[in-house]
Image (tube, rainbow, N blue to C red):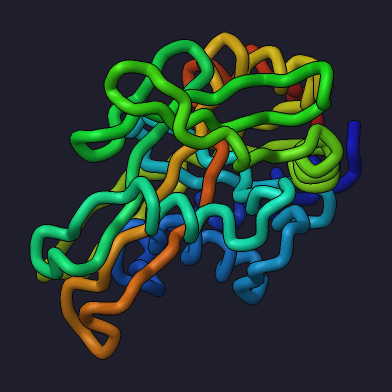
Length: 251
């Protein structure tokens, strides 16, 4: 078995035995940030795995939603492709109607309404070896198909960052406005291959989400925020992309 898996499993058991731990950050990212802090890791925004060659995903035990795989900026022929999508096909923010936002989750199986005027659809183009984003009007007339991600880019992302995955489950409670986590279970997975990843985009199991909005308050109120263009899969579908790694009781 991978030595790093054994090491992370030992670290997890140490953290589990600590019991309830106060969050080291407010908000939804506290659960993961706190766990990685306990591993004595500094927060990084580099496209590399979290713990040696292992990518860590941390979630609430009672949450069975999506797993964020990775973010990827389009590498097609146009610079600032996502910003252009927001400007051309976004919709007005409720509080700041002069500013457009772009938020939604799209797939390759069915068109997704974005705002009230446009439909978004993913298309796997094997001939050109890229994933395209198709934008149409409500009558399915194509308005834009220039935003794309090359297979080379996607393959590099998934092989470099996601060959080995660890999913950490934790309980959460809140006392006087402070979140506490009790880390309960860790599961390890090994990636199948890139062709499986592409196939799961085709079947709609892997989706793409946009989250470009407007800060509603604080120092940057009224400014655009971009939380990335993210490839996601439901936790229940992880076994379609990964083989589970079973730990020996003696490990």
